[in-house]
Amino acid sequence: MAFNIPRGTQDLLPGVSEQWQWVESVAREVSRKYNYQEIRTPIFETTEIFQRSVGDSTDIVQKEMYTFQDRGGRHLSLRPEGTASVARSFVENKMHGNVTQPVKMYYIGPMFRYERPESGRMRQFHQFGVEAIGSDDPAIDVETIALAMDFYKACGLDNLKLVLNSLGDKEVRKNHRKALVAHFSDRIDEFCSDCQGRLETNPLRILDCKVDRNHELVQSAPSIQEYLNETSVQYFDKVKQLLEDIGISYVVDPNLVRGLDYYTNTAFEIMLDEPEFGAITTLTGGGRYEGLIEEFGGPKTSGIGFGLSIERVLMALEARNKLPEVGSSLDVFVVAVGEKENDKATTLLHDLRQAGISCDKDYAGKKMKAQFKSADRVNASRVIVIGEQELESGIVNVKNMESGEQEQVSFEHLVAHLTSLI
Image 1 (tube, rainbow, N blue to C red):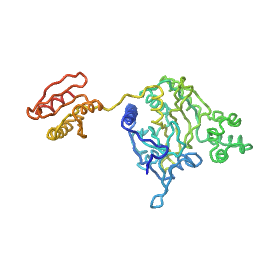
Image 2 (image 1 turned 180 degrees about the vertical axis):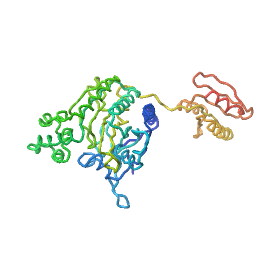
Image 3 (image 1 turned 135 degrees about the horizontal axis):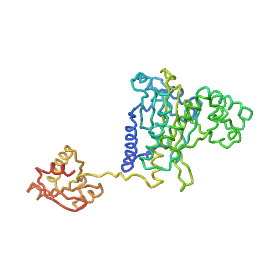
Image 4 (image 1 turned 90 degrees about the vertical axis):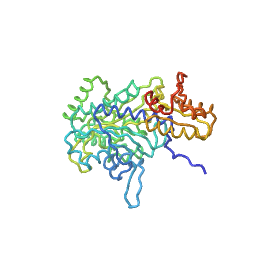
């Protein structure tokens, strides 16, 4: 019987996993520069956490979550996104009481959504995300956007396009919601069943529908910009001014909406303009949220964040021939033929590893020539040959595989010698 990987997942094999590690290291370094610290939350949470935060009316909750009952009858779900778990942890661990606010955190890890697998969209995907919780300052919005832009640039991606919108505060969203319901009600039967269900629960999601995006009523729907109050306008103007001050260009798109219910005020997406492919690829999206912390029993606290797909970063790098060359290499490969020689090689490997030197040997009984080929395949910097003569004399040849130069070193001084070189 053949066993295959579940649909919508992938194995990250050696040679590929190193590229992922590199992207993750870039994310950690950029986060460090912005003073964001890592948080690690469970892969599964109580289902209600996502129902409350992401929203009952969203496709994520209605169609895409992996939900199950444990043996105690509790309803649990694999996390479909990262913000809800971070917000839950913020409240549960009373981080709102921290002296330093906002609390700035980042996460890296797998998320799960039951979607139709396609290029750049998997059922198990991986996100790098940040959350800054505990400040109403527009400057933290700009900092979050700048962090995302810096991350992509550090990965080697340029030609980025930042798209902004303001979703207003709760009062704005309430008034806009009424206008949308009035706009769509008489002809809602012309829309898909999902949109018909969204009319009363979350009509803003109709504007983001993939099925009906070209419907004339979607094109003529009232813009949330028409309902922004003075406070929301001032906030958005400040965000735009600060972006201009630090040299980040942007485009305002009144039709930009985020798919999660908790967003207010600033919403943004970052796209990669690929003229050679004739497409603009969305890399990430995020925005400010209010009311989420209160949903989990915390005090009135706002936050802002984003989540981006590591898979999409690697796809974009591959499309531009900018995947990092991060192949593995070895400091030392030990070539040995014969039982006593292999015993000595095993002892030597242990001593070298204790000194912090990466090393390996043949375990398949290959002949010497084949062992040298193995050393080439693992990109070993140096090769040590242990034969009968070396055991008798106590001196080995150390070959520099790049230059071809060899030097003789005694077993007694070998570890210290290689440590000084490597």
